[in-house]
Image (cartoon, rainbow, N blue to C red; front, side, top):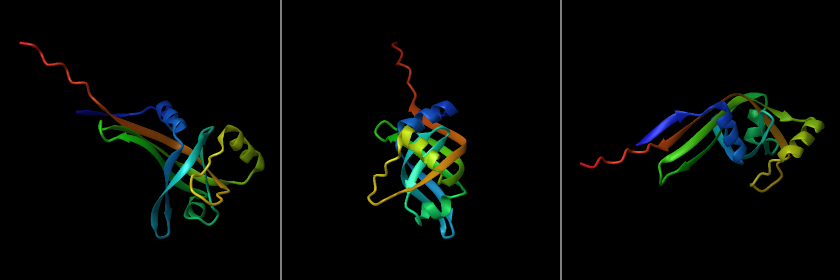
Length: 141
């Protein structure tokens, strides 16, 4: 038996800080896309890098997007998920880029140059987790 419960905003932020990969959901003219990214948590924002003219660069800039990070343990049937929603924009300012690099520069795993930084300043942060409930011990008769 499992227990589903909501995570607090501080729990969500702590989980975001622990991870480095997630998925960005963006809507393009041909429909929704879900794009895996490496990311950094900087201040109250998520930062990820992409290539100019990628789907992410073309349709996430100045748009409302969703971001998800999660972890599951299929064997134990437990896990958690955090979703951040808000407006994304391309970072052009040199001082802002330097600030991002000082805190933690997101390093894409995929090959090729990804020199376009996108900041998702989230306005909503929510999450939930599923954990095993402890079953009471059998009563001796």
